[in-house]
Length: 260
Image (tube, rainbow, N blue to C red):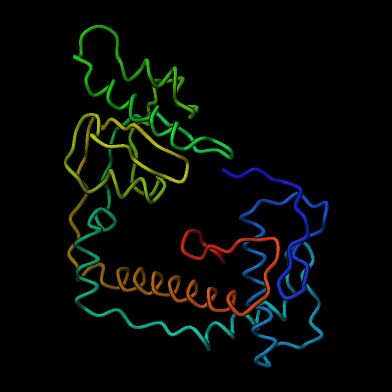
């Protein structure tokens, strides 16, 4: 979750990315900066007119959009995934290719919000995890009680109950830590997601249908090509940013999706 703020003017090689009084999140500002880096690269390579108008409120012209696509197609070198790499990916991400797997679970969310002391938040989450794992099972439901008192998710009012959930219904980073495993009960670790830190209890599991590699080869190849494209794009943007004069915005290509 990000909070909008009134930014000072950020620029890429002198081109303004926002109005001085415009409410915009840091992520939106990074997106605009990366798009502008690509727009200017397309201009330098003769794919876009030098008279193309600067983006208005982050929106580029149709010509610029097409030129950026052409520039990326020309400059991003995407290797074709090998058979060995595809098989490794399939084995490591079995849950993705096992349709029908479901988990009945509940969670306690410690949300990471702007300005929060992450170290203190982790400390509270770890204390909660220890408390619910060490409960002897007698008396009141410790997980239910902790979820109602501590969770930053609306499900806290129902004791953190998420019901039956499929991998595609979770944040991908959360799904990777929960699905395709055999664990039942309170997981012995905090689960990280874009929303924060989760204490998770798996109540039941229903295995999905095993899918042989040959049946999903195309999907695996597509997933690896997409990963390679994102990696190549981030490396490309890092090079463009290093050569540009960027003001008022920090570009961290390793930590966030820079262009969507």
